[in-house]
Length: 380
Image (tube, rainbow, N blue to C red; front, side, top):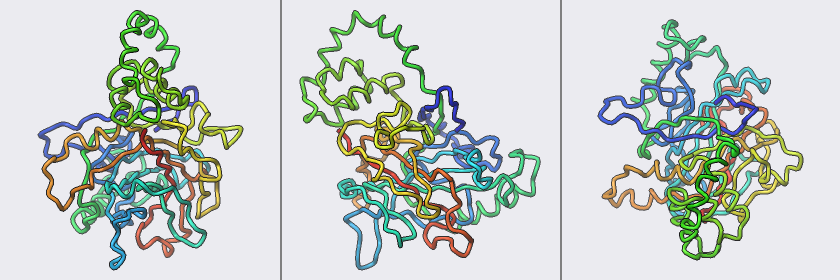
């Protein structure tokens, strides 16, 4: 993701992979060693790890109330999405390649937990509401990928293939997966560009008013109603009977691109950190309930740097994650598809630090991957 500062919000869209292909995603994630092909990321599927050697163990939900305390085993989470978003402009050459992974838990109990921040003594920190975020980065010259990102450097790609083969054949890291699709990014359209469309539709607005949430108040508004708004009627009109200004702003903003599944705007500048939610390019909250303050976002446990907003998952992503799931899944996996959120905002270390200071300090469970912080806002 390359941030255009003239229009700093990038939108992510889910694009289906080709059906009937034996290898439908040769360039999704890091399936190709040639990083010149990398762009955007992917939604669902198995994680494609940037460092294919020092990979994490299966990601467990730290919030799940169904954990088996006797065996100290929590529910295994599944990949919601991964992004390739280099941060070599922050002064850390080791962040030339940088990928972020968001895992979610499908157990219904995991959605009821309050967000928590990590204690000082712990190696990793609890994400909130059944969401965990991992970050991995590598310098431009590394042992896995060609320096120039091209197919000509066969030696580096051979090393990459060796580690990749050992990983996929010798480890079962994520036994279940959501539906996989490509994540492509585009700049958010300017609201001014949409104004003439609104003028053209003025004659239809009276018809749209009849949709206005069927007379429901904000307290009665459910996620299903929101989904209908996103897919159907004019969002500005549909929000007329909603008295939460945050929800109205949310619906109005996403109307510019209703199918967006992700919003990306790395570390937007804010004058008052407690008003981050009101910043034009900061997180777009779905309601005024459960919005974090500055003190709710923990600093990086490795370097102490401030964490700031980088991107958010939109509720539309759930549709693509569950789109082709088997409705007749056996009882073994029953309830593990119960994912839901209003939005998930991801906050990352503004130094994009390397995490543990040496290989000897690599996490036993996360490998070379560093945990970041997510704030899950419940659905309407």
